[in-house]
Image 1 (cartoon, one colour):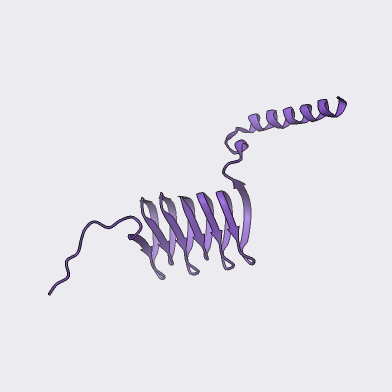
Image 2 (cartoon, helix red, strand yellow):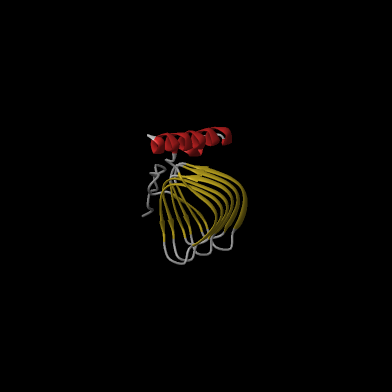
Length: 144
């Protein structure tokens, strides 16, 4: 008797996979989770979870809800929720995250910014004005 398949797969059950030995260039947009054990070059946008295995390599811009990495990322990594970097992981580039867990041995080369820092969204001029204002406030408090 043949097993009937259903076309309705929930996003938690459906995982998009790029297996070891596969090399892809382009753009991925998904509402489900993605696991990369091969290499991907381009942009990844997912409202799900991104897992980069120990043999995984991602070059480009990544926007995701949560990310766990054991592999290599080169470029921009923007994680709204939890970014978990395992001991074998390496990130070269810019990281923006909601929360971050880093195991001993993980390598980060670049800039890390907490997503809920209000100054992240400020222009360079606005940052300077805010810094100047904080300096003036400090000076006023010291003289009072």
